[in-house]
Image (cartoon, rainbow, N blue to C red; front, top):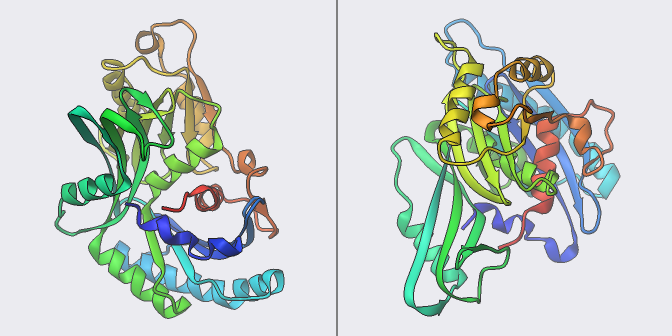
Length: 346
């Protein structure tokens, strides 16, 4: 089951403070978020720093150096802010979102089927997931999240304890580069003096947070060009149907052509939704939207009316996440706060 399930180890008190860490290829960001039951999560302090790569320096070394500087600033400036707001400057939980090129997201389906009706239990699902976990050289399993359940052909939110003939459990898995994962954990343990450090792939976190943010959209494509790779998630009738990931590195094909090729592949199997959520860095999102809107969608969507492209901005989440600090809104940190707040205990 998800390693993040125990994040609410103080849930009975209804309050908790969490350190959020976002690591991408270009920058690192951190925040203190305060969770209080019945209220929107509150970001009390936030900071983002660029990754500055020195001559002949491995990218990984530059990332870890930036992370250490960020952590020191969180403790020096953020902890006093947390203390003033909550009465305690300590946070026992750290959630780390890691982006490409150091993460990989996979999706699989665990199936259960018998001739006679059986009761689906949590322990059955846990055992099946543990058995199907494959060891990937150079990677560590950071998180496994159940993102969809289908019983006797019908999607359900509460699958356990029900009698069925067949069941399908859709699982989203986060794999992290082992060397980077070790370096991150070592630095954060030294800084925050906690062993409760939880990691997840950035694309997995953003997908799950987006589904919470736009629950009214039951059919959508989520196009994520935030990092150095592109991910496309297809959601139909609230169910995660497919995930495609392609490199965003410079080559003979621009990113837009890669995206359209993936759309075409999906269209061979599924009718495509009429809405595309676009996730990108705010300085680039409008140019990405413009390029995407200029493409020919008629053949793929079998319609003269193009799909609606919705650039997801930090301001869209302002009503779901309170930001107490005067720092400009940061979409990734807002999505992380929303993810934490809506994550069910397991």
